[in-house]
Amino acid sequence: MSWKISVRAPRKAVEAALLSHEDAITWDESIAIAGREIAPDRPEEWVLEAWLERKPTRDEKAAITRLFGDLAVADVKVEQLPDIDWVAESQKGLEPIRAGRFFVHTPDYPENKAPGTVNFVVPAGQAFGTGHHETTAGCLAMLERMKRLGTSVRNCADVGTGTGILAFAALALWPRAIVTASDIDPQSAHVTMENAALNHVPVGARGGELTVTVADGMAHPLIAARGPYDLVIANILAGPLVALAPTFGRALVPGGNLLLAGLLTRQEPEVRLACRRAGFRLAAREVRGDWSILWLRKRPSLASRDRMRMARRASNA
Image (cartoon, rainbow, N blue to C red; front, side):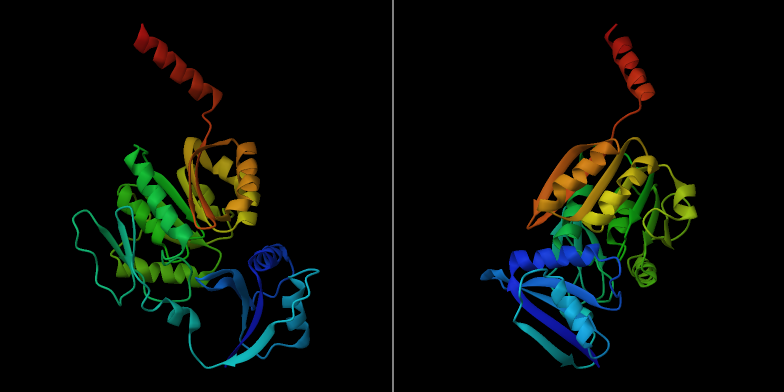
């Protein structure tokens, strides 16, 4: 049997608690937490929920309430749950989404037969990234926008791939590209392989094929060896995005593309500053709900800029 701790508090307080959890270096990773609004018609009333596979101890309950800092939280509920995969249950029956040419649905819904539609089916499961979250849907739409504006991709890395959706989309848009999908969670890598088979995504090491690996960020010999990249996708969290910005800068070719998501709009300035220091400029942004989706491009090297200037002069001569 599993257990859940629920703490009701104002939206800003729950968001602040989630950020505190993100920064907690010594957090017990067996305790999963998330925040949500109580109901659509009560957007400022939120609940922070923590799930455990055991009855929580007094110290574990205290760790949850400490995330709220000086705010005295009184509405704390501890309950025992039946043996149900709540993540899977929460995803069953979700309405399909359309993002650009992509149509993402669970097996409960049929595929979209409209011409030009790329269907992805993702069973309800443990890994994040079914496309129903604003950031995943926003990334799909931004990838479509990149393609429409003429972006060419030969080598792509999807960092924090979740269920593999964004890596699958990159292969659909640039079918000759070499695509590497990585995640720190071995379960996510396993799920990505299963979903690749389910969606007929070719797996391998050549162009037009997907390679899946377990890695912490960009820190993996395979990811380093397969670079440099002309597209890196990272739909993770603001803190890791800031930390990884210099690594992204080194991993991308001059003029390469960086697609970032998983950051709240109020976290965007910090992420953009870190990326600017790493040599990126903003190409486009989109806001979905409270989330920002950023397309950035690495500045060309001085030699590349000199070659472009010389080419323009030659064409004008």
